[in-house]
Length: 169
Image 1 (cartoon, helix red, strand yellow):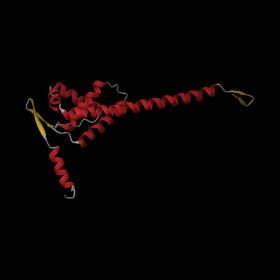
Image 2 (cartoon, helix red, strand yellow):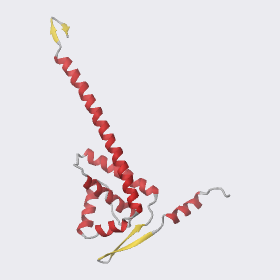
Image 3 (cartoon, rainbow, N blue to C red):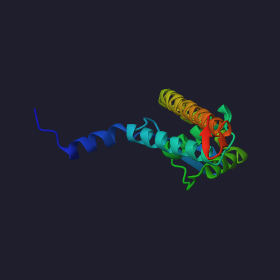
Image 4 (cartoon, rainbow, N blue to C red):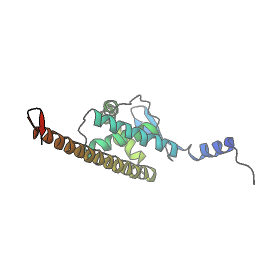
């Protein structure tokens, strides 16, 4: 049994996750798609999704299952295909998807991505959504408790009378 060497492991990992399939999109365009999703890339996608979700909350973007699925699909396309894009913000990611849709390429790319890898990753997104939702509910409960405390403090100030420099509650 040999000692583990990082270079050997890197070569083994690269072989395992190097598989690609080429999709002819027509109009003289092609796109390469990863056949196996590298765990480190999956983590990057999940982190980027969480960041975009935070951005949406900060900008008070109205979100629905539909636009969250659009963001998820965009991030998967961005990380697991050869599509060249600089899309980083929520608006840029949505614009990327609109361009692919309007160009007639989105459905072809998504169909080519569909499979066990995509299904498993979408399940992971579901877990992230659940965590985010739990954090939002917890934060809302904390804000509500704080608001109730402030309300009680405000009521005690309003109900205080001052008579001859003496406070009577």
